[in-house]
Image 1 (tube, rainbow, N blue to C red):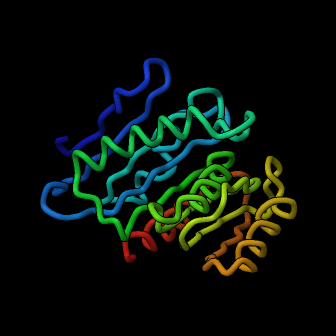
Image 2 (tube, rainbow, N blue to C red):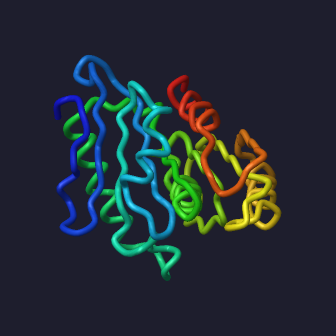
Length: 202
């Protein structure tokens, strides 16, 4: 695909985007997959991350229903859709297998953490902005984690969420960079940039 923003063309009502940077044909590029929160859309997730990810292939899929399948009862249609989207990206572009990140905000962050733990042979990094929980399949591989959370979050309170998730991941031996910030349920631009730089730098 030419540089720019493209619809995935994989779903009729809920689909998503792939943003291709300039120079994509010349080198292996990092890939960041960004997942929206509950009730969200790809456009909103794209706005949260696009300025932080220049020079990166950015895949932003949409869940099949209002949020991600594991939250609604179990893994299934969203995993299949994500698999199809990833196949398209890998067939069309040169992706650096050492720099493939699954990222998300809110319920999308919970889904990103969960899927990255179970698919660490593919995802080298997981970027979780204000996650609520982890529902991992059997762990595979050793992805690196970046987690951020606002201390004033009144949607997914930090004490019940990241302050429990992060110590559990570290206890299991995973490398976790953790940032708390003075704010609510949001993705600060500087933290989004820090998270993506960790992927770009490998």
